[in-house]
Length: 174
Image (cartoon, rainbow, N blue to C red; front, side, top):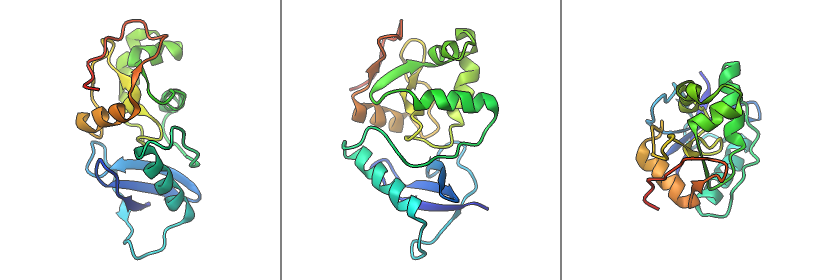
């Protein structure tokens, strides 16, 4: 079983999953699709990447960090990997729709539901910013960490639609 390390955040405890010198998971404790992780006791020394990730997460929540440099290893199907790579390219504070991602991947907006499935199974929340994806009308759709957390993350970033997003009519309490 992969070891996990707990770190605090303003939105609840976060479990970090690491392998070698890579972050392979970042999950809000108890979120949907929370994997089985053997949580390591706090008294045991964590690998350096845990401290690095914790520092960057703290900087993000304090408004000092917009981009992350923690080395990641994302495991999933080829389709999931392509969606997650697209998520990584969404700038801080910018919103895009599931249909926009489908079109960017050459699939057409009709594949938004498939994109949504891949987004929902993103194993590295916050750093791979799945919270920046909204429904076609701009409404907040599902988030594995919960809609309250998604709203909080978007408020932190003062999120707004990407200029290339044609029809987003945001329903955010910003």
